[in-house]
Image 1 (cartoon, one colour):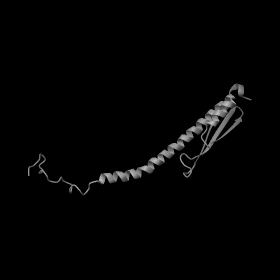
Image 2 (cartoon, helix red, strand yellow; image 1 turned 90 degrees about the horizontal axis):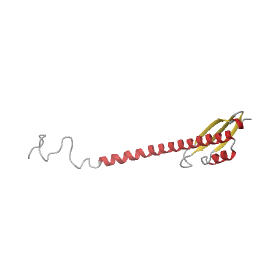
Image 3 (cartoon, one colour; image 1 turned 180 degrees about the horizontal axis):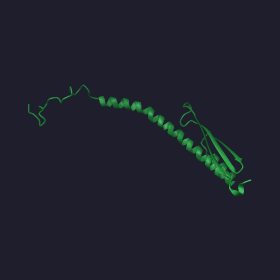
Image 4 (spheres, helix red, strand yellow; image 1 turned 45 degrees about the vertical axis):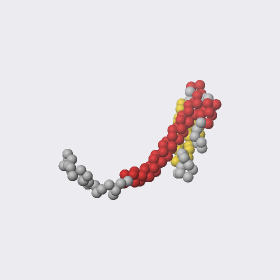
Length: 133
């Protein structure tokens, strides 16, 4: 047998390996198990981002409705309220010069059997001078 630069004989097994067949396919099996473990984590992150998206929509609706009511534009406030996420309840109140809008929602971003997250987001605006009473 001829020797290589490293001093090993050609055809000899590499140090630390017992041959070709013993561990063949182990990387594939480990990758498959890691993928199975990672799938629920990715799904949970997607669910969290879905809830956050609904929270941002509710906040945007509350701000827009409060802004339009502070301007005295009832039609624009109704259009903004119609853009709220499905199932959201929009409540508006006026106290002196302030217009307060609260949007509540039982957030279920994907399916009904997942737990609901109660969201309550609000916005307060000062009424414009011609709308103050």
